[in-house]
Image (cartoon, rainbow, N blue to C red; front, side):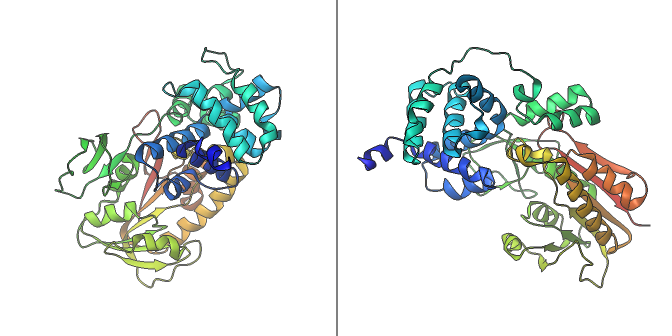
Length: 391
């Protein structure tokens, strides 16, 4: 009987349910999806990704529905019950091709399989009340499914129209961009569209196995480093290595550093020197470098479309902690910049504390040259990149 019940739930929903529970415990959705969907059929893997990222993107709305239809605070429900309800409501409200009876039935079965059989009638009753009719949400934080404090700060820094554009962009599935080596042709079975960034292409149709997936914003900011053969680049905080690989395309020599050996191993197939180093402390180099890339750890608020769990974890206090770390990293990196050299300071954050304020604290003035890419206004993720030229 248990085996029959287990097969009643599709592989995609079982995996999505488990991943959502792990994300609540601190896991990262994309890492978990990569680790747990490899053995699924491609269709099931795609549905699992849609369910996980969709539930996380629309979490505030889903919880509003739970509270409205059940009269109970979602935060006080067992995690398994809450996850099953979010999965069910997301399918009922956002996925037109999912039959309502399948969404309800499998959510109920997931609760039973998780050891919460007592909650099955409750989940069934709530989900059967969910309709597809338009509703008026109580505020923009629920309607746009973002923490109110984050929406408020974006309006303060960027204006209301841009802030709402950022939030709406974060609710859409992001485009996929790939980078081809200069002169390389795309493989058969995939349709690519060239972008304004050299060697960067948007995936129009097909999958991109074997191609280097790298957001257009990530590729665009690297052009500011003015790389060319004969130069040596020190790439601090290098993992996972997309920008490292892009730098190598220019013909320059690269020394790639990261704090963790496990992360640095991802670069083992790249033709560059690898060094385990903590860039928040004085670095173990006697020479100076003509080019330095400092892609610092940051909040990642420019990447919320692909990493939606970040918006539910981030706090204003965390921004202050990141600012302090970024200041240390930049000061240490500048010690290794050769006269006349260029340092590129990069974040995928939209927050001034991690961007302009870091440069102002270290340099005593705003950066002379910087680029900011904003979701909803510019293609791809949000990025900040500032060029510092040594005298």
